[in-house]
Length: 127
Image (tube, rainbow, N blue to C red):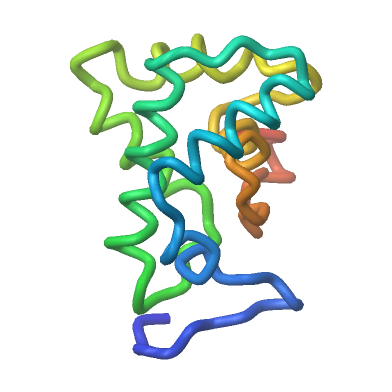
């Protein structure tokens, strides 16, 4: 959907609407608070990935539906290719207690709405 209107599916809040006013400080405060509640140590590497993803959402999700996970995972893999891409990202975020993948833990830590298409039921893939 490439129109200029915000798109809401099944009561979900579009990603852009959730991040458009978030400041870097607010993101860090939310992530650190949620990480402490999960007993998960967050470092600068985690924060760099989270900030990159939120900036991606602010830039690329303003005018279209961005609730599918695959394009965001592709963005992160390319952005952090110099550190190992997907392997690096999974190393950082797959250790979050009770969660698998990369995007789900980031959304939980940053207090973002869930992505509508974050799993592929046919293959059981978690991004």
